[in-house]
Image 1 (cartoon, helix red, strand yellow):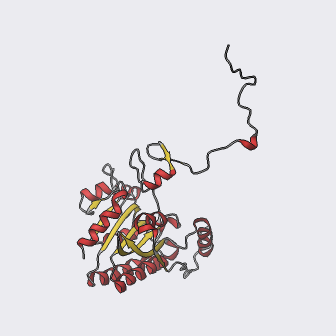
Image 2 (cartoon, rainbow, N blue to C red; image 1 turned 90 degrees about the horizontal axis):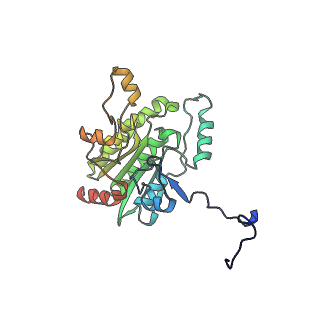
Image 3 (cartoon, rainbow, N blue to C red; image 1 turned 135 degrees about the horizontal axis):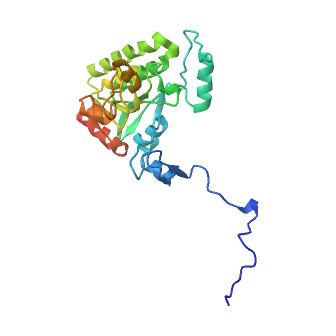
Length: 280
């Protein structure tokens, strides 16, 4: 006879003493569906440890990955959009801006900052898709322009990380004007012989692709990023033909000569430092 006999069936634990795993402890990859610890996923630069899927991330993640010890000075942090056209769709544009600010904690679709990257000061602009699809409005163009001015003033390299659906329809022509403004500022940066690297992430489309995203001394991308001007569905309906497999993926764009190379996010910081040192 066993020296221990359980008298009651099951585990008798009062509800108030039960412990559950905290929310956010585990991350499930949307690509391979395998789970990993959230901390492990973050330490792996927000890429899957099983299939290397690159999670879509924004400025907060890129700043923490690229700046040494997440040490940086943000530029124009309080700038927000006006309403020059008194635009209304399902809601008034100012109401949409306020709602998006409350939801995301962001002021607009780009954040700009400067700080050390492997010991060298770099100025960068990083887009946030969560703010109205990363759309390019007046604030996005102005903040990028001012960041380029900052790079010229302090003689630093400039990094642009794009993730956008294109121009912001609520600002119409004002949005399209940002293509010319940012391109002109990049020409000034080039005249000063300062390095500019453009990183295209998933997705980079529309007027962003047609302007500053493709004007780098090096144009690079993350694996499997969607890169193009119009979307695949629009192109398919326009030309009336099926598109090649992998059309507008970073790998397809690289093969056809529109990118210099594809870089894994885990290697991004070191590769960027190497590029900037080459371009001095």
